[in-house]
Length: 218
Image (cartoon, rainbow, N blue to C red; front, side, top):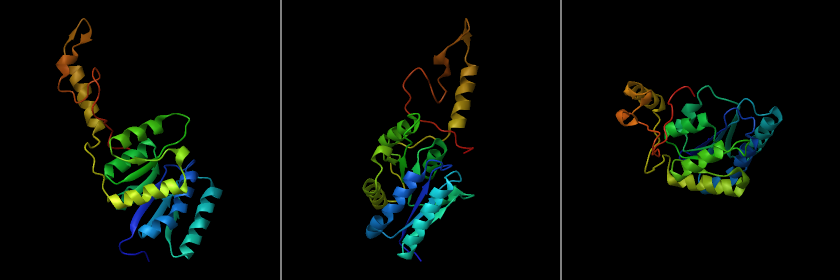
């Protein structure tokens, strides 16, 4: 059994088709992290990780458990959100759905974006890290030493993120309010007066100061 003060690290990566490098590297950090803090790792590979890669992780996990280390490799869970809520730290790839679920919990997270084909995930993690919402590691810098350092640092900082600003997760409501306000403004020669939509929560004629997410259907 794990120590009563053991920290729970949950790793997830959506479908998992390209999650093996992250999961494999994280698995190899456990011995180092355990020297600082009793830790339990739960790796949720996702259903689309190739079978031979999942089997490799499971076999290596058995070897670590034989050394009295605590590590579980799961294919998927019906309620991954409950694992996120229970976690002291989440390590994940930076897909939109996964990222929003993590932000909803307020848990500390290390996000590793995909290399490509687009820059979407790298842009997201860079922006969110600058806001203090997550920690991030570029995939080109993914190594046992670098990831172990981030895991140990985040476990020392505590479970919940403390940031100057918090993400607005009411995207659906905000979008509906803005569209309603826009539709309700008077028009002159077919042009709406943006100034008359002052009650709208988001405007597009000036720099936006907050990032708004929809809160459901992930």
